[in-house]
Length: 222
Ligand code: ADE
Image 1 (tube, rainbow, N blue to C red):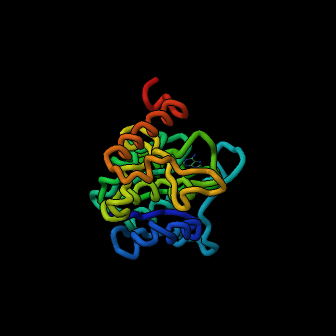
Image 2 (cartoon, protein in one colour):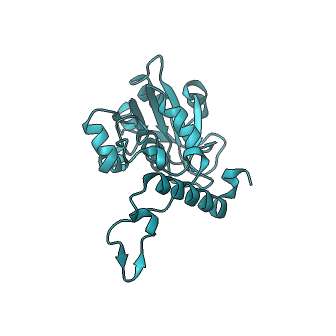
Image 3 (cartoon, helix red, strand yellow):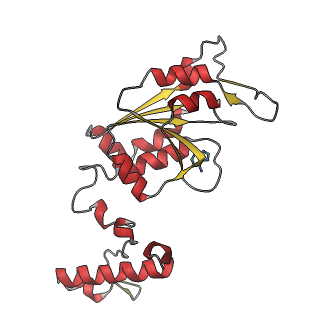
């Protein structure tokens, strides 16, 4: 899967070179290409924004610069996503839908936003990561890319399976424990030490259900 990220701050995506996502890149399971929108400014000072028509505070990213950046990566089957608090809220279902795409172009705005004309022409979908406002779309794009990449086949081993994680089947994940079995008298539940696989699975499902009912009853439609 290919990601082209259009941004004024490519360094903000350094986090995607770490850990599981970093390894997925090394294994070439994904390709994340960072495009600096500033490189597409024709201005000798590399200007990318201007004051808003009609007045008001802040600066607006200019349509021509953003459009040229888009043209440099566009393909026929690419889906263009604009990160914005006014978009549809990201959830695991949306992540699964997006993971089916071959090519995502993720557009990150900064300052007051991007000239609406270019958004109207190129954006297929607007996505928000939650009801709060960030300084730009970069952190939101990194969150979304992380969530998508981790469910791409081969990125997480079957054993660790992304399938046992929270939100699979609309349930939160069961609690997890590791050695030592007794730390300061705080004991790991006996069932997990029993070696009885079927009973352990049953216990985990029970825990998931209890946790979901307690913490996120909305996921169960309650
Ligand atoms: N840009 C600024 N805030 C955002 C949010 N909550 N989600 C996506 N993009 C954003």
